[in-house]
Image 1 (cartoon, chains in turn cyan, green):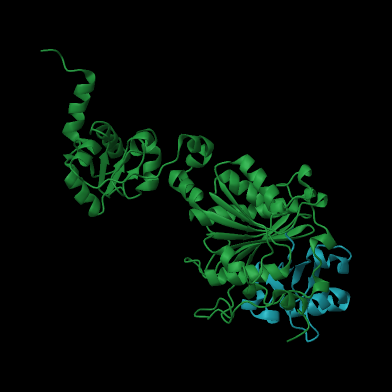
Image 2 (cartoon, each protein chain N blue to C red):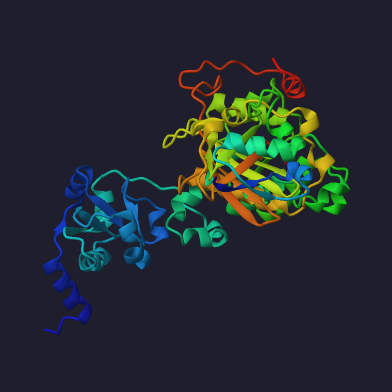
Length: 93
Length: 395
């Protein structure tokens, strides 16, 4: 199992007790989602739809690379990988 | 017969070593690819100079020439007013390693009297030289870059948290025309972060308040106030003629509208957005010549449903945060105008203030994007309020 760090955006930290990062073990991005879904249901409901697809206003990155072009939820994770959850934000004023 | 002066001896020495050519031959060499360097001072050059000449005043010649002419094997022709200073300059260039350096006999005076082409380059005024002196010292900006900034037209969507620092620094940098679009009035609760406004302007239109501040900082620029709400019917008439649009709006409907218009008009869209302690910056510019990046829709095909996207008014924002994000937008804007460095096309900088972390994330264009894919016919503007309020409810 790879030890990975998941970065939680400000807007969703209330679902993980305010943490900005969570460490867990997972071999793929999809596995990160299911581990988080077991522990933090509210967080993953906002990241994925009922069918488990990443919502269109959220991007997931592994070590800075968008998973849209690196294998989607099957993107493999090496030991030490950083998974970033980045939702669209609109504020500016 | 008296002894020749030291100066005359030195000139004779230089003439023996530096080949002198007639202006007409210099023009021929320049057409064939030689670098023509005019070493006169700025006030002389303002009266006219050979077209296409590299204008490197004698004082900074050695410091700047390698930037302007990196190839030491390129033929270099040097000119001044009368053909004397250019001899000294030519010798100095030869000692820097330039292998074929020549000097124009009779200099620019002879060039001009011989009826050869002359251009009067646009130059900075003495006041502008003083104001932008720190820019002029950097070869990446210099006089040419400063003139580009002065000629640039930048539109800021929103004169609020992001718009304030962008507007202030672009005005200070000498961006010649700054457009501001905002329909709102200054509220006291804005002043925690919207630093272009002041307490005595509470209740006055933001575009007017911002205009006063910007002209106070730099009276020579032009500030165009668009006191209106941006929508599908006015977006093109407002955007038309601007070189860069800086998005500092506060809602998804405006962000999609700004994106669609920028894609259609091929204008770079410098994007910044903030939420509480974090912000995002990117440059959405599918038309960028050096790299194919995404548009906003490629990255976020749909906005979040309203219940998942609280605004700053609802969720709060650290007052300093729009300063950080807005200034990154301002830097990108200046880079785009000057054509220097590597803009954030296809990259997103994500700043999280609490852990003090900046991450660089890659963004890819969606080859199927209805708005920016190759050969796409613009699908038209939509009702952005409906598009954003119905998000998340399925097709």
